[in-house]
Image 1 (spheres, rainbow, N blue to C red):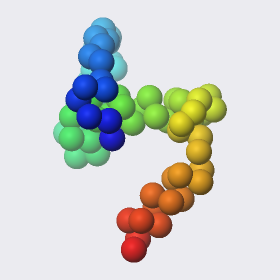
Image 2 (image 1 turned 30 degrees about the vertical axis):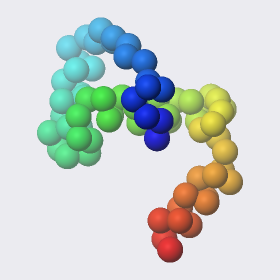
Image 3 (image 1 turned 90 degrees about the vertical axis):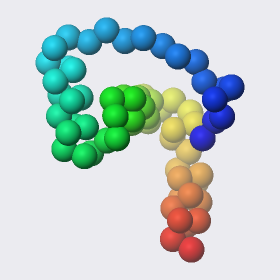
Amino acid sequence: MPDKADRTRISVTLTVPYLEALDRLVEEGLYIDHQDALRDALRSLFRFQGIEPFTDKGAELEEVEKVQD
């Protein structure tokens, strides 16, 4: 994960249904907070669109193998 110096803050305005859905994901314990859910959604979007580095299956497999060891 990049350190804080490599991050940029952005702002997103959401309608009530989106905010309520995010709240529900957090309340159900699927995510720690709204940011965690949004980052995961963005990763999924980037993978779906084929945007690097999220499509590198080799790196993902290496990470899984490291965790399993």
